[in-house]
Image (cartoon, rainbow, N blue to C red; front, top):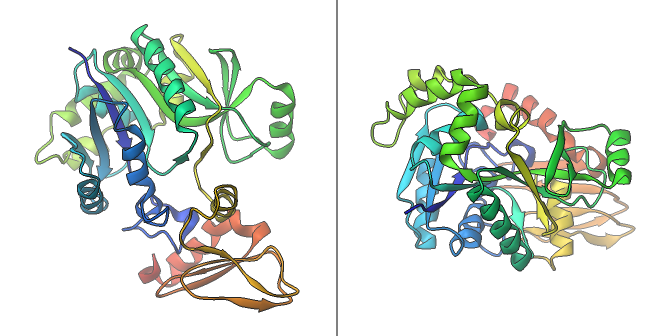
Length: 340
């Protein structure tokens, strides 16, 4: 009898939320969301929907992942540890090879936040129905604004017309005006065997090297040479932009990848201060200024600044530049690696 697995992808380094997020404690493991992490919220959100979990992570994150899994009292019967990252197509191929062909994989990043759980469950249910009909299913989020940080799905109801890369501001605005574009959430649902058939059809090289890699596993870890041999490619490029078996579920649950400090602040304001470390800075002649840390902060004559404080570092950001934090991360990487 087939099972439904939640494939939890945990490999991101969270550099866009540095210094809050670090190499060995990336965004998904920060326990600042009502004392839980995004990783734990992912498990909690999906535990009633699936029969089992499968974790795909790396050697730097497995220790913390296991610790946080233990706190949820869930059991991950399948764990695959990648010695190096090779993008989402190989990761999903490895997960698909680790289960039975008729098993359904519900593939989710673990560093996103989702609310409106009833709507989420309904969308999940529809995706499973389509997966049982041998479709590869994406979850397209109904956009709230012309966001330039996401890819888009052009659609006609559940039919996918095209996938679009991250647009510039004008193109994103045109997408919103057109009314038939969705944000690409990076969540998928399909039978393992159907995905592998399509991967073998369109990227035989990824399929064959992934088979060799899954057969090289010892103590949950893939042999590094076998992993290096797999081409680095996203699942969108490798399969979803080529296959004729694609469907999308237009989804109107609240979804955010919390990929910037602005996104964290906006989510916190919309959800009644549900992030433990964020506060709006009070004072005199102060507006639009926020603090992420554990102290009381006041200011005089300051506007539109984000202050991030950790035990070893304080970062000041202009709100209009907060999406460019990777530039600062690169500077620190070249000057003080101990802060990464």
